[in-house]
Length: 216
Image (tube, rainbow, N blue to C red; front, side, top):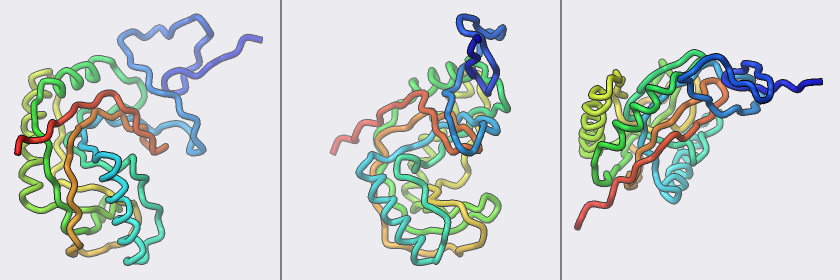
């Protein structure tokens, strides 16, 4: 019996034979109890350092308890601030936009960004419960978004900026009004290009770029 292995988006392929399509990107094949991905989103985001991510995750857990929320918090390694949605794909993923996004991201030079989360709130349309940052942090993030957008467009992409800087803690129906929290300080020292496998909560890292610490 000849075994059949899954390739991109569940398409069958005989060993030693490549699919007829060329110029396509092969996403990771993830065995998930959720089944197959419902599509893919290519995006750029700021990611905290591991120690900062753990601090933020602890604060998120405390807020979850404080507000009596029941959904699980996102794990520390998934916490991020979205900068741009770069492209969306239903099934087949062309290689060209991934290469273009990598090239564009590599051209941007930005020092690390100090960020302060000082309030939290719900985003009802997406059911997200999020951290929000202060005005100074938002301005720094906006500058980085602008730099990235210029390069992404230079490479023929049409980025869709996340209009409100935030970090999602969890998803749950209902509404928690905007409120102040004890400030959470962290430093963004890297941004990354991610392929999100929608519906199975998987982030595939396609590249990351360091943001050096600013000279004191």
